[in-house]
Image (tube, rainbow, N blue to C red):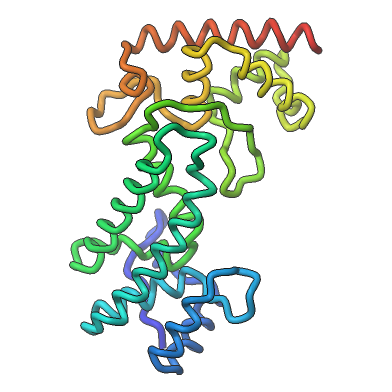
Length: 259
């Protein structure tokens, strides 16, 4: 029977895996390590026999606890390969300068998280056994906010709630102001296309600020460990806000002309 998770949610209730994950774990516990590793090696989610990453995380931790070094090493390699494939889509060379280095940094920090979890210091992987994709998306965004890209290219807006880029609160509020208090229009594909085109036409310094805001970076922070827009662009907070304000003024003018 799969071991229960130690972490608790904000209401004090223990984390629980979805029923389908529990069933998957129970099924895989009934076969030997060789058969599990063969199943773990199936990379495509569309293939029969694909094992979700929540299960790989569970058996990775179990192998470490049991001292099964070879099994641990193989599962670790397969899990990191999946993560690398995900990062090629979410931290792509076409959207970020220095994307390869950023991907390597994210993977390195995730490996550190696994090491800390295995050393028993924290239950740092519990949520990854519950909803791996969501947990890793949050982890990736947290690392990005701390390290920041060396420069940012404009990315298309996404409101699908998945791995695509979310619209930051600040950009959404600015868009609502542009729309005269009608924020629903931001869901209109035609408007979003116009907004992307208008952002692309901004001067480089303003476009970079808007691009960073769209990724959720803060303009400034009292926490020296947080990577902010001011640090990324190597200028003071007032300069960033001035660039942002000029960009929003231009966007409002352009989009109202096209309304």
